[in-house]
Length: 150
Image 1 (cartoon, rainbow, N blue to C red):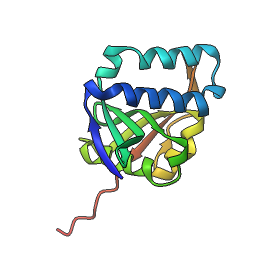
Image 2 (image 1 turned 90 degrees about the vertical axis):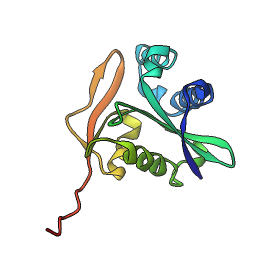
Image 3 (image 1 turned 90 degrees about the horizontal axis):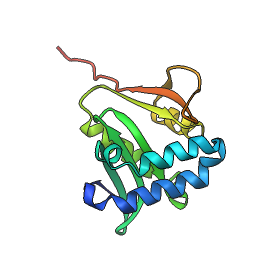
Image 4 (image 1 turned 135 degrees about the horizontal axis):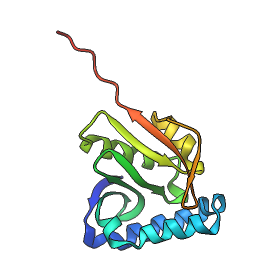
């Protein structure tokens, strides 16, 4: 598996993967307003251009996408169903962690992904919330600092 930053001009495939996996696994947790909010975000060039997209590739096939805003907030995180639970998401997360400029990362996790983020070391900051039809749990990851030998 190879992890690469996806250039803005090559995002169509990544956005299609995100929308397809969202509709398969997450849309059932949302009212129509939330689905519309999510899809509108995906098709907003200004919103998308503000993100850095990481792609996971297996034999040149895009199998997972993670996008960050400002290097420390995960805005999108989706893996093709047949590649889930095979380390793709973890590899994407750690690739994004390498470029993060702080010790913390945040995410507004969908109900479906809370357990996934917990396995990566995230902790809920509050109860589930609802905004513009989107259900989410604010979560934070704090990197452990290595003990100083000094």
